[in-house]
Length: 388
Image (tube, rainbow, N blue to C red; front, side, top):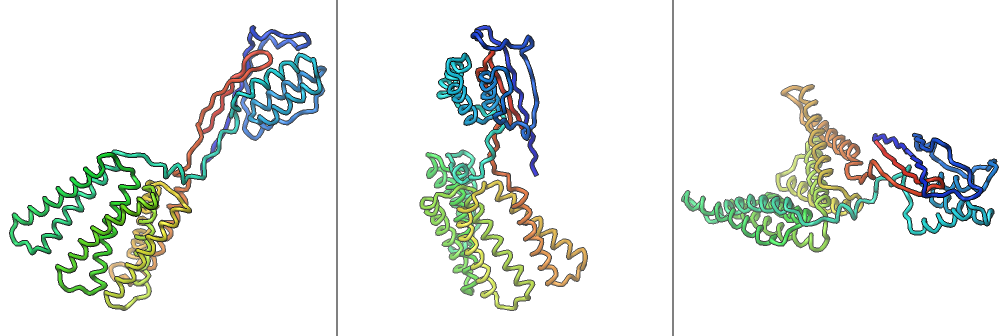
């Protein structure tokens, strides 16, 4: 829980340039006062005036309201001074202050803006980033090396020089294409969408090869290569259409990944006895449905990429904790059902705990210290507020 204490210091300094008009009470000899009040006590209300000069008392009450952030009450009180005490020096000052306030922003001395809960626009308002470009180039270079190895399998390379040449060719293609394509810059969301498309396409190609029971090695590798290429293109098109942020893509990927892992653990708990094709088919379906579901979830629950990664780390830690506890209890001869059950429980607990503990990770805090100045009847006023 985040605890924030707020304080306000109001300093009044007499100014000789502010000449007192007839009828105005003289200021005290010591005109500097400092007061610290908790926010709960800084709630100005228009008092029942018992002063000998209610006009000046009302005028002072208006400043109290303005200093505590209640601009509406201050304006209403100043207007009341002019209406109830026409011709009084305080009424003249009130009219002058109202004219000044018409072009003056209200000071926020006691109640600075609360953290914004509407984060969608701020998180999705991404700019071109050199880091995003570097991540894209690095990832696509690695993907190019993998593609070179896959082409080598398809071509049945037997010569070492041919293998090295294809690996270098793939790396060169990856770095060249990604560098030239982003010469004008790229946003983190765009780069993450492309990289995720490449990775997810490779996973779909691999899973499809198992589901289709492809026995031929070349055909299986061909499906993986095809998945990479198609996934990369789909990631680019998805960004052009949906314009997700890096956090949106990370959340979608996380939901898809954890959905597949949960189904795998559920199979272990139920001792699901099926052929590899059916088992892999359910994992592929769960992960793809989770990916799409995560995309919809990101519209309702926008978050940064950092928060999504923290939740992933928490889920991984929870999974390892659950599995580790079972192994400590059962030892080397652990039964699979309790192992998967505790692993699944730890996973869910870790993801939930990570989401809860990081709930304020993306909140935009108001400035901790604020300074404002405003005119006073007997001089100048300065307000300083803070929070910690």
